[in-house]
Image (cartoon, rainbow, N blue to C red; front, side, top):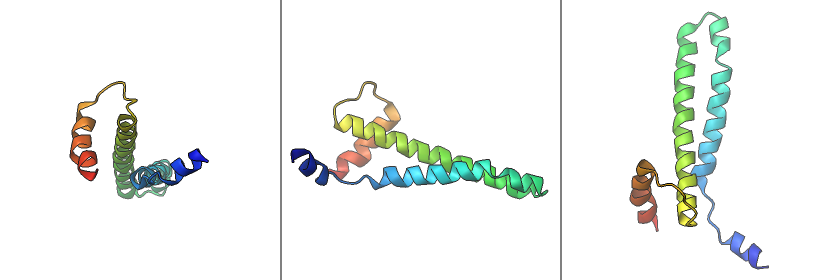
Length: 96
């Protein structure tokens, strides 16, 4: 009974789930970009590769930050990472 109450009071972390969906879609687009090259449309192929890899890397950065913030909140953080620490102080502490 107590675990159900504890789980129902937990906020959903939308940034984590949105970043996960963006990472999944962008890596899929990256792996299917070879179609543009085989059709002879190299500009579109390179554009899809660059945009999908950029979206993938940015979403992975947000995923890593959300995991870092969750571990820090639970006092389970082993190594401090300076860029994430600055983001945590700026965004997470102001939100609370």
